[in-house]
Amino acid sequence: MAKDAINTGVTGTKRVKRGMADMLKGGVIMDVVNVEQAKIAEDAGAIAVMALERVPADIRAQGGVARMSDPDMIDEIIRAVSIPVMAKARIGHFVEAQVIQSLGVDYIDESEVLTPADYINHIDKWQFTVPFVCGATNLGEALRRINEGAAMIRSKGEAGTGDVSNATGHIRTIKAEIRRLSSMTKDELYVAAKELQAPYDLVCEVAEKGALPVVLFTAGGIATPADAAMMMQLGADGVFVGSGIFKSGDPVKRANAIVQATLHFDNPDEIAKASRGLGEAMVGINVADIPVPHRLADRGW
Amino acid sequence: MSPVIGVLAIQGDVREHAHCLTQLDVDVRLVKTAEQLKGIAGLVIPGGESTTMSILAVKNNLFEPLRELRNQIPMYGSCAGLIMLAGTITDGRPDQETIGGLDITAKRNAFGRQVDSFEIDLHISAIGAPDYHAVFIRAPLVEAASSAVEVLAAIPADKSLTGTDQVVAVRQDNLMATSFHPEITPDLRIHKYFVDMVRSA
Image (cartoon, rainbow over all chains, first blue to last red):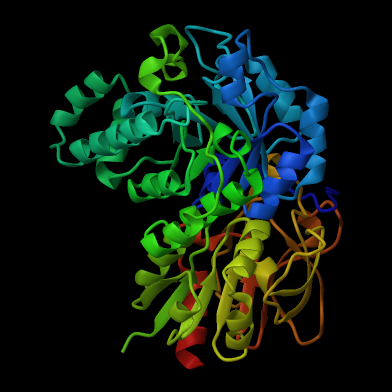
């Protein structure tokens, strides 16, 4: 995209990073592995695409170390669509993040779906102009990521399963912990911060606003229009759909249907209409059948 | 009686616009269907992703009623909303539809991708002093405008590396649009300007 109008404004601020995520609200972000899928996603009304080499279901099936995607592939997708493009870096792999930023990607996902590069530290996200989204299973984890500079949070769920139960559990946990903070007195928040292992200032901010200071999407196991609408009714600002679309029988139909159901999430008639004639859903695996060491949501802390 | 102002709720900064408007003593209605457009006195088209907004407006049969309505009530678009109200767009998808109404050519993502998003203070005489702190996110630019279009704000030539004024806020009769996002800053003057348009329409 030609950049013909540069000016002397300030870039990379907290406000433009968090604001970018604001613009995605109400939308569906779809995992895509090639240009063809990216175009299907855009045509269906996806708000952004996540460019990656293998969808989580394949990463799970094939095993091995999962890393950042090939820059050529990310470039091709950036050229192919006009909606924002996101890409994943491994947890703690700040050089992968530097590379992705240099490609002109609009958002980086520091993601547990890839094999972590650092089992102690996450990326210091304040050092980047590009904004980051990070996964979280609970409020403390979300606030630690925000403290490191994440400008958007997605509840993790369990990627690549098509089993929505963990996604439900994580968004419910985060929302419930926020409500709990809002009901506390000021002096109780010190202990709450200790228990959440999160910075006191952020805990106070959440308690006062009754919401995270950044946009909260949900992810990990969403496979049907009704799954997406349920996440929205539970209070998500939007959804990530990974394997659920391109591992299904009819990705074009399903992509459209999940977008429509997310838009009309509070209208059961519309969700019913979107749910008709979609063909096979991704087969999926129950989270309970996955041995604990292979559960992705446990990566990150 | 307070006028009812709709916020097009396909996606994007719906909540933020609604929050700004409710502070200005108007009733707000979130609009997702043609039915919900009935009876509103003004409409805000929020910031978001214009490609997505346009595709979903087509799928949900909203363009026809919106085009009809743009001749009847004031409309205000921020960022993606500016693109939706532009008569002509460049660097969009070739099939991208708009509501139109503003005789302008809007260039999508004119300042670059997300890493180029920025904040800057702007002088806007229509809302008076002090300067307005404007936030631009993957923002469009008004590349060209007919003589019927009033320029409300521009990044002045001495602050733009192109060396020319960059038009970022316009008005034409009942329609106004900004490249930037007044909904994510606490300064309500842009929304107040629009609410005044609605009240005096």
